[in-house]
Image (cartoon, rainbow, N blue to C red; front, side, top):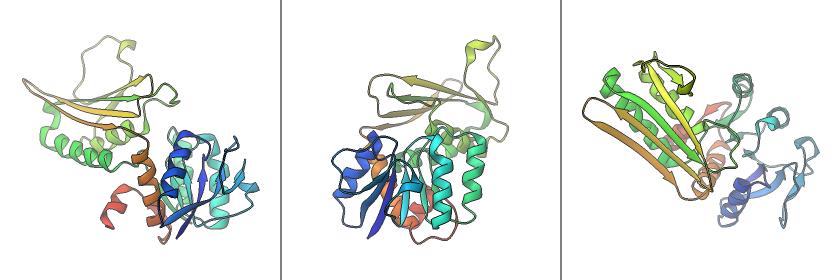
Amino acid sequence: MTNIILSGCSGKMGASIIACAAARTDCRITAGVDIIAPQHTDFAYAARFSDLPEGGDVIVDFSNPAVLNDLLAYATDKKLPCVICTTGYSEEQKAKIRKASESIPIFYSGNMSLGINLIIELAKKAAAVFGEDFDVEIVEQHHNQKLDAPSGTALMIADAISEVRTDAEYVYDRHAYRKKREKKEIGIHSVRGGNIVGEHEIIFAGTDEVLKISHSARSKTVFAVGALNGAIFLKDQQPGMYDMSDLLASR
């Protein structure tokens, strides 16, 4: 049994993780952290990690970048593995996560969906095959309550393609200038509206043909399941950085 401390327990993703954990026998939520008190829960709660009355085996974080310092301080002090699923971190914050992984295991991913991680691999393969003969554009769509743009997943996709196209340059706002598109560009576009859970499309546009690779999340459950599987996987790992590829390789 893996005992989980859930950071962001009062949010929509927190509610999904609580529901998913309640239906499983290999993990459970033993404590939650959120600035907003959760309703109708049977686990210990605190507004800050330092005030937690009860611990656990692994921290799962679906909260806000502002929580990072408190989270990492608690995790490194208690030597607790962390599954970090929050997006919107600055480069400085990402450096802090990497630094913390020297003393604790950290599973860090902008998207916990198995399908998303598969299309990332497909996008890398397509980029290798097409080279600079095809332009690359990424379009992501999310609900109107999402704070960060572009999504962490869109950046994951772009970063993966950049491993193949090493001179890639990300372009977010084409209306700011007037010039022809350069071959090295990867266009990244964000749409916010309604209650869209998550849509990602990668467009490879060449001469006389276009390839599109897309993924559609129908509910938050796919991300909750991935986060719980990541927590169970991470529980017995050594310090270091881990992601979905490590989880898939372990199966």
